[in-house]
Image (cartoon, one colour):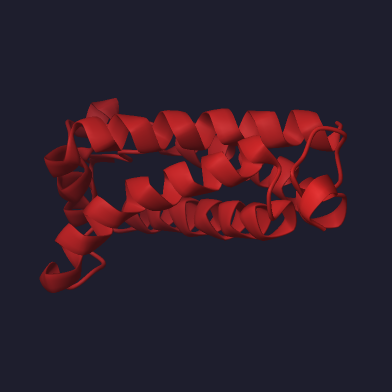
Length: 145
C-alpha cells in the first residue's frame, strides 16, 4: 500500500463518518449515549465534537498536511471505537455503533459487533502505515516541511 492510497482510504472513511453525523447531530449524541461510558454532561459535547474531529482528520489526510499526526489521531480514534464496541458487547448492550450515522439501541438480533470490530482493526493498518511512512507524492507536507 502506498502512502497516497492509505491517506485516501482513511480520508474517505472519516469524511463519510463525519458527514453522516453532521447531518443528524442528535443521532450522534444518541449513539454516544448508548455506549453508557461517559457522564451525561459529556455526552452532548462528545456527540457534537466527534464529527468535527472526524472531518478534520479527513481534511488533513486529503490535503496531505501533518500526515503523521492525522494518522496518529485516526489510529487512536479507531482503537477507542473498537474498544468501545468490545466493551458494549461484553456488557450485553444491543446498540448500533453509530459510526456512519444512526446509532443507539437496537434489537439484539441486529447487532454486528464482530463486523464493526474487524472493520476498525482493518482501518488501523493504513493509519499505522502512515505513521511509519507518511510521505507521498501529492501532499502539502512536501511544500510546508
